[in-house]
Image (cartoon, rainbow, N blue to C red):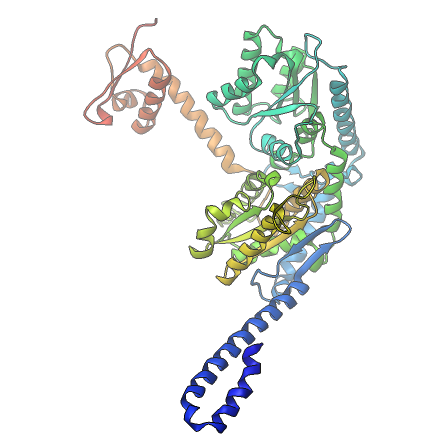
Length: 568
């Protein structure tokens, strides 16, 4: 601190040289300001260091840590929320014991049993879980060994996974995090009902469709997007002269339409998806384990990582429970109402889909109109993000200087790479830069009053991916209890499905009204007693995809006349 050391010199000069008094007084004033500034910095550093030590949670045997010290919650937060916290712990214990934790659908919620079957509430449930894991391993082993082959006797090289929402996002995230060019099977996904998306996947597979194994995932068997993908795949296989059944596997509920279809057609295998598993928490059931095993990932390590995190986040000590601390930070940041968005920034390419996975897990679980008492509450937390340091060249500018409507979660992976170090500067690697950008961005945001959480894992492997998923699953469950909502149903999704079904029924009515004379959307809407705007959009869609439907453009969109030409 040169400023402090210099002050006595100038004080001496003041008394020794009256002529220099004015100049030295100015210098002393500047020195005092500099000393005050540096003391403020030292005090801030000291305060942050003390807060870091107080609120850092480490699971040293796991190599995991969670730092909430840069969330500006009051030190008495845990005490003030004691009753809510105790309620959340009690609700979680009841859930894991087999209580009806999803009252809307009158279902148990059992994803925690998947990684520790001994916790299952009945011997039958435990047996089902263990049997499924064993069957998944055996099936994958037989595929890799060439005991289960395509109909031409060749080994399967490609894996086409057909599902949507949790039935696809979990496997997609895990595949992106753990996959490598050395995997025994390449994987691609149908996760929408976009025809062009189907075509792009088929183009990628190319002439090796005959060596492609297809997994169709739908608990109910009635999910339209998944059904459409399955029908498109069946049509493609048939067009190539291939029997789809010799390439297909189902993951579905017992007794579902998909299960019946797969059984009747003689598919290669069927794996269960229990009704006590929701799509967004299904990645440790056959939904996620089957594609993982076929790709060659270590499903035992994956389940072990989740079980290890469960064990540590089951303890009722708030200060040492990372999942409860996450839930409390979400509550603090959004005033218990989700008033701030959750920005997740994993500093690792392999975790690029982590935020997308969390979007469904968090937003579908917590985005609810009513609480468990039936009161209107409009709960939820919006989630977005991509990865670091990519985002430092996109929206981190707004995070630092723009609207303060968010908090950040940084995800650090301490090991840079599996191969040899490469220095991009003297003594500096690309990984050093990656770590520097994480810490630098964290500091730059804190300087502007932006709150953040930082979690750290040693590396990206099956164990730690399992642990991260388990951590957030429990945090979501805890937060749901803190705000008294059902985190395990999705009425809004069902409402959207119903509205879409109604529109498709209307489309069939609209099509029947088309003639060679030509009618406006409003005229057709009157004839079918429907909303003219809905009819207009349906007509435009039909005209864009059926060459027989012609459009005579009017002066305005409402004047367009739609007619049905003769079949070619």
